[in-house]
Image (cartoon, rainbow, N blue to C red; front, side):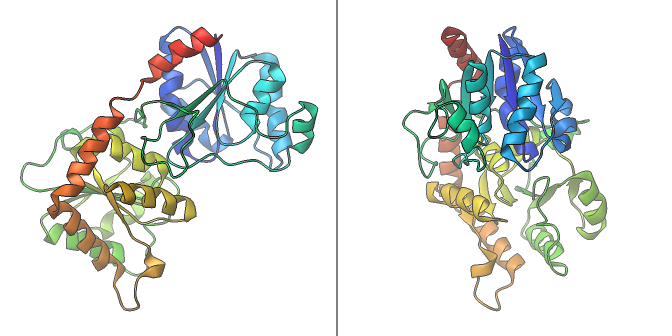
Length: 343
């Protein structure tokens, strides 16, 4: 079978689709990934055969670009999830359509596709032959009863590992801070990030900062005695006791998979919903800077919350419970077998 995966937006979508794509390749199937130009290098870095597609603003033009790719490489299965477009592509080609949630929040609709919907006789998003959900049951704000659970398998860029990356400190908790690949959480006013790091270290924690290389070069000299740089989160996460992050879906679920408690400082409403879901389950605390009382120092507030989580066993207990449940979900290899039966 030929599997065509589509991704766009952020590197997190590429990381999320990779486990199923790798499982399909390992089962002997052909795989091709279509990505926007900024994501091409990311897809290649994690071992996905990838082709760049144009990313015009108009949804209909993006669909047309995928149809043109399919003329040269016709799939038997289309896997996507960020919009209606993968489903419309599958419907146009009359092939299997797999719809996949990327993380904790539902998929978005796509404006500007009414002509295509009318052409295919559809009143809404095409029905998927298989609807996959990698969000741990119990966390999704609006669960779909038709979704097939699939285990989240972290997939990240790799590099040369150093022993500290895969070993847990023996005498102190490890706190990892990250703002993902696009967030500007590092660019906090004044020296508040340095102040947060200093406070965490003064409380006895080891601080690790996961950041793109450009940000690492910019901030390395400002953050004191910390490991900072691009880190493979799938390797480092299991060595951590706490993660402080921006609320990215792939980041949050990677730490859930590793059984790590979290502090979420959301950069937008999407991240706020992710943080709220994690907090409701009891594995995280949500910090909303705009809602803090006047005069409250943000870095001191985060440091205090971090210390509260590290000293309160119920956060780690809930994180362990969630990680254990994630491990019971069907593996991507099992999903590939189901797709083979559908073909």
